[in-house]
Length: 457
Image (cartoon, rainbow, N blue to C red; front, top):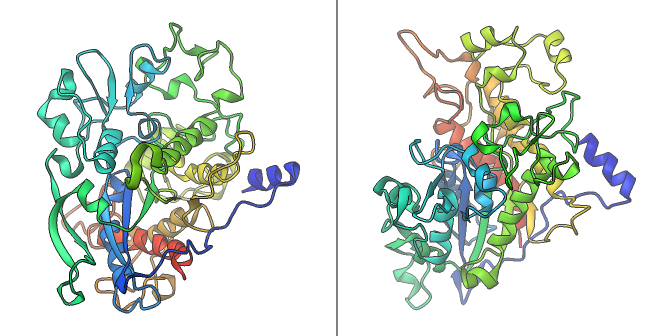
């Protein structure tokens, strides 16, 4: 926030929108509830704990009388990496960034990130899945590694090219007594039954092209470029060059390290490109989103190698270990009292930076921060991990079926031994990356609190 504030003051800008202005969506059309589609994009953290269904349940709860719309979730979630591969569908060999695709796990990994067709064009799995939702077409070629059944399935909505979902909507051609209607439809056909379309993006960076405080000065800014040591070597080359200058990735392949090579700048541009594509009616017609909402992922544990060597044995031995004040003070780029993944922590800088775009013509008013504070999702998940949650932490009403009231801290769980209980205690399961049922409710609650002001009449 310090960098954002200083940029605002320096440039004489209005502060970034805190979010919450009503979108003006109608609550009813011809006396029927308005059908609102929620397109969910994100990593596997968006699937584990099932926050999308919990968010829809809260918005559709009969007690939510101030709203009255009908919300339907359509998922385009893909595990693994994000960022760059959300912004690109196909990268041909002639593209300067062709080799950069290889930073992400290829077709042999669980949840493949990309594949190559017979012409060696590399295709993004997650973007192919999104295209299928928006266009109704399987764009992934059936040649090369892309033709493998596992790829054709894993890169399609519902993990199968012909997958359907139970789609529920209000059909205004039928009497109200026969509504709502539920049918098994393709993801695209369900999306097209909606009157309004909102895209919810909980996917602001990735592991292959991480955003981090690489220079360790306690902030993420234009001075943080990708050290080649943090990037798989196969992804270094570009435009016939090594792609590395003085140990740093030369992202734009111009032979020099400049502000254009900054990690956060490029990650923000990928997020911007994805958001503008989602809004592009010239590309997707009536399937385009009317609004896009961005949020940081919740915390993750692990990647102990990102902490000082002296701390790594403790991190590896105990995910609940507490860092000392002296250790925190010695690592400004890791201002964390637990061994949380710092690159996930720094995602909040992307959400903040996205609101400025001061040197790139501003942002689109249809792109919104999902919460007034960019770190809201992180802060809530850290609170659950270290302290647990109490009744005053929730925005989703207690009347919504299944919503917990008190959640014990993850730090109180037993990870191993005779009675491991991470599935039932705290917000995260035993891998300290993904979420249990309470964790799904926690993510849904942060989204609910952030979206409610936008959905007010």
